Figure (cartoon, rainbow, N blue to C red):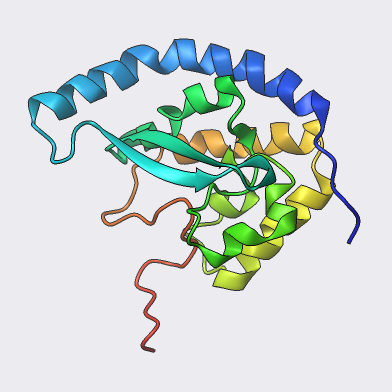
Length: 179
């Protein structure tokens, strides 16, 4: 496999679009965070999780504790604006996830959305999600990012199923390793 170089044009998309989306969604995320604080959500309104970023560097992701309208995803927009994440890329994985050590995965910033995250509710086998992420890393370009972002809009507006899977878990609902 050839070495994957970061694409400077990704930052040219991430920074202005990420900033615009952050400005547009801040009132909704703020209201949801206040609501969670008023309900005294256990652990607070936001989660803090360590994830592996570009070149294997760990960073802390702050996410709103809700799955409604995928506000947890839009609450991560500050990470895109700061340059820790990209709008589109492989899922941000925990350091103890063995998949996080893959060199190809560390060659790009993790994304809020990506081809594998879009397929998380499908019958896609676990290993094929990594293949989608690998294909994205090897072939990403601004047009692909725009296509993934357009496909993400309906998933943001769809009401998540009860017990929705995490962004890094692409197994279908009801999956059991015991089967």
